[in-house]
Length: 74
Image (cartoon, rainbow, N blue to C red; front, side, top):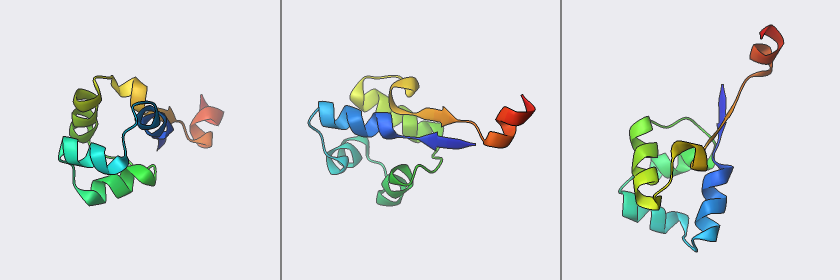
């Protein structure tokens, strides 16, 4: 399973917010921001904080990308 936070980065641009601004407003740790930048999985509580801060839903900030193996079996 893979995830992509490209929607989040585009949303920040639209809102004229930096990643540092988001980190400070949400109170998430710098290493968590690194995980987001690397498209690594983070907890739902972190995603929830981001959604609350930006007044959006999970689907507005993250995309689920199924593994090729899952697609082949499906």
